[in-house]
Image (cartoon, rainbow, N blue to C red; front, side):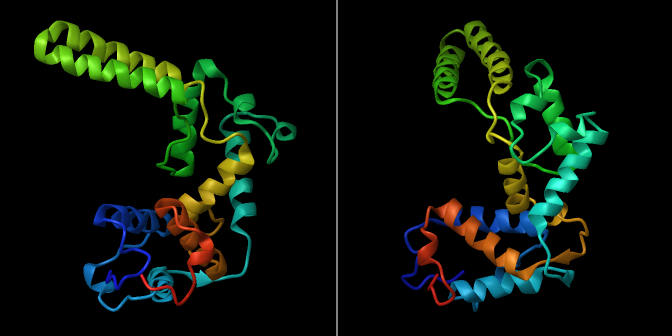
Length: 222
């Protein structure tokens, strides 16, 4: 992607690659390096993505379809009662802590979703970082202790992840699925909504590069 003192000029290639990879995964497309030779503006990049997407254009709502698909999975595979499932349902209410890791992995598999749903709190991250640094130190001074701390860190990380969701409720999860997993979130894989695609491209640009959406428009130089 050519840069002419545009909004991407202050970012390194790894940052830009992250955006490209995220868009490829979201829309199930594949870019070639030559695709970007003539791309100079955000509008041209947007058009490139739309040209790459295979399928029938249709003006419908993916958020609604995503929630219905998620609800169907929760009812059929997780035996969650219908009346307990709505957009405001908290994830902690339907995924018990004692089996949370396995249940979330099962859900991700059903949704064909690769991104994380469980995470660490800030305090837990600090604790695990300290344990990791300690293990590295001991691996060079006392291998047994280093291995011991690595095992402890692994056990703690699995336990800690059970407590924390990246999303508070099904509404937030549904929105993330739509953005990060657009094609698999739709009722019909062979269709797409161009207006939604444009919104998601801008969302990915803004979120990944921390750029205000107001600075991203059709004529923006990349």
